[in-house]
Length: 93
Image (cartoon, rainbow, N blue to C red; front, side):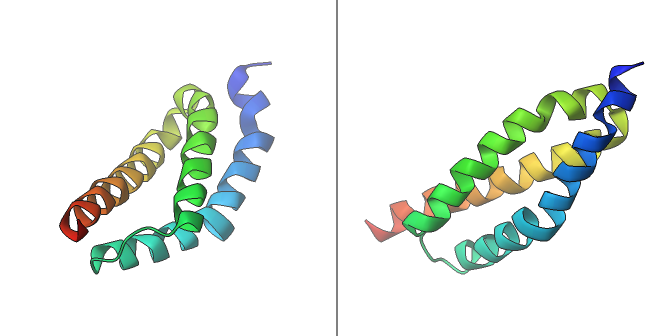
């Protein structure tokens, strides 16, 4: 059996978590950050956990090319949030 077929169940769980939990909260954080607000400690902790999860899921994305675009877009979204949050922090001080 190939790695791709072995990955199916894990990918399904990861996608469900992304759609139901990670993405809605990440988009809400992005909206706040884009309006000039700073990250709260809770949001920062959430993003750290989300980035760790994304790193852990990377091996599944690499082995399954149909998820390359999604993986890249999620990474880009986290990058945009982090860059804007740093910009907001610099503007406050």
